Length: 178
Image (cartoon, rainbow, N blue to C red; front, side, top):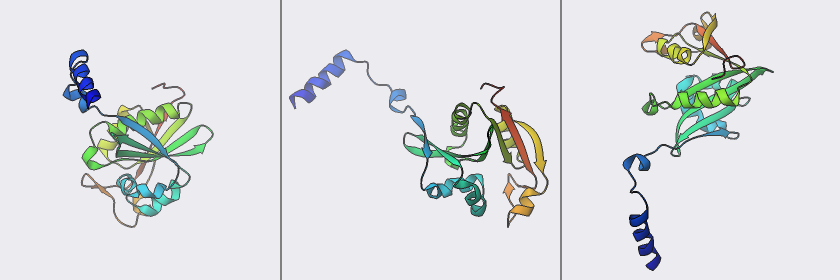
């Protein structure tokens, strides 16, 4: 008891009081998931609605999970497609954590990790999603007509619009040091 009282007095006399910002500071960490990747299926299904499609790339992908104060918020699956190109196969954030910078934080991590690569990704015709990537330096370079119609057993609807084409975007990190 003596040391506890002494520490309390030292804290009161010598340290600045903690403010609420210090107490509520976010501690974001990215962890690479090497095993049991399928345990993250619930969040992966936010980025790709078809489990069979996810299972096609999950084992071969590097999986990165963003934790904020030890709470899983976002996930990214990255697949090396050639010696100088990686593809983001899935980038997803739980809905209650969206618009809080989680996906942006994870993308910045990916940009640093794969700084000597070209990064590509495919997404649907969703303006919000396309604008998100374009703001981060991605440009459209091709599209696969009727991809979602031909490869998914049910219609994929985002923002009230059925997705049809897969739009591929790219970012050259070798030239664009972000």
